[in-house]
Length: 124
Image (cartoon, rainbow, N blue to C red; front, side, top):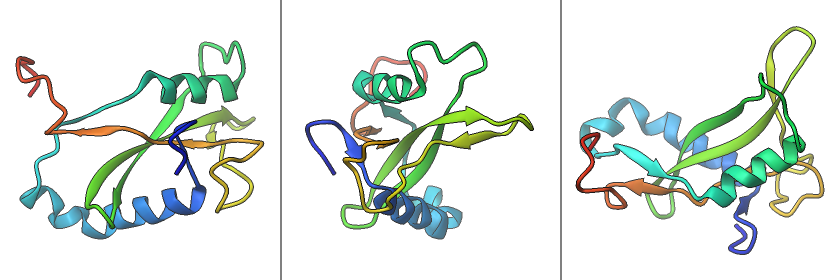
C-alpha cells in the first residue's frame, strides 16, 4: 500500500474482498460497522482516472473488504466504464501486485466508523 498516493494493489483488494465474503455471514453479529470516512483524495483519484469529464452516467464501484492482518474493515473504490451492453466494468490494474500501476488503480485509505465517527450525527 502506498501512503503517498493512497493506492492498493489488485492482489491486496482481492484478499480483502475474499476475507469480507468469508466472514460476512457471521461478521455483523460480532462487529459494529456504521460507515466509512472516505478521503477526498481517493474520490479525486478515481475520477481523474475515469477522465476529466466522465459523463452523467459515470459510476464508481465500492467493494467491502477486511484486512485480515489488522481485522480492519475496508471500502475499496474503483472507477468503472460502461460497455456497449450497458454493464459497468471495473477499471482494474493490469498487474495484480501493482499498486503503483501506470494504468488503473484501486483506492483505499478509508477509516471505519466506529471509531472515526461523528458522535453528534443522527445517522450513528
